[in-house]
Image (cartoon, one colour):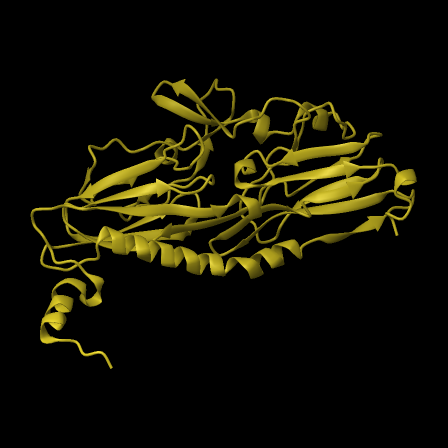
Length: 357
């Protein structure tokens, strides 16, 4: 057995024991917290702060860094109520709804935070135009819980600010903790993904020989969100009806959107307002498109959009397939960058005589 000398033990006690740093009144440190995690290839997003809890000294700072396309916030409520995410827009705007300014935009700050007032990062995402990182320097001791307003209590964390005489982990050790927590979260994904894929519903044959086919949207289990269509590829015939139905587990809004060459639509449109910028919900995403309102059969030329499908609102959307052939791609406007994309392949029965057996 290898012996540890007295000098070696002293070194361990001074610099390595339990992995904590000795306090230093002269040097402040910056710590990184990752906001979420995602795997676009599997359309999986994890709504967690990594790490969830961090201990720092007074004068140290935390930088929260966007780590997903899915939108999040870093919000210190300080005992207040969770603000609503969506509220009515000011009169005269192009949309009736906006993201609450208390949620959409950063709270004005000089970067120092004493933990006494509401503080919000604004919407954090890796998408262009969103807040990419948010930094606060903590000036008072205390335990400061925070939350993502978008995802609620499932996504929360705590910053513990302690005095200079209390040892804390180094930024590098906190990063190792974040990676460990992230790996633990990813280890939970395979069975959740299997459950999401198992939502597939068999087609039903109609009296006229056509089929009604069902595609399920999304799946959630705790902080793990599967932003997918199940199945994400389906073969259909002209005359068939396709129903898109929200998963019973999914609390997120989605759209079913066939662009057919139309311009890509953003989820939010920022416009100037009397009291500052207004983050409007894009009406082209929020409402059914003209082709849908007119009851058109799905074709490869018109823009088809379901409008928001959400729990407690419209939860299903259907289209009948027109006399076309080929592959039509579609996605969710809110989550396309997170991997929520799919396609329909329309074929005539003469080319696939056994497809309906």
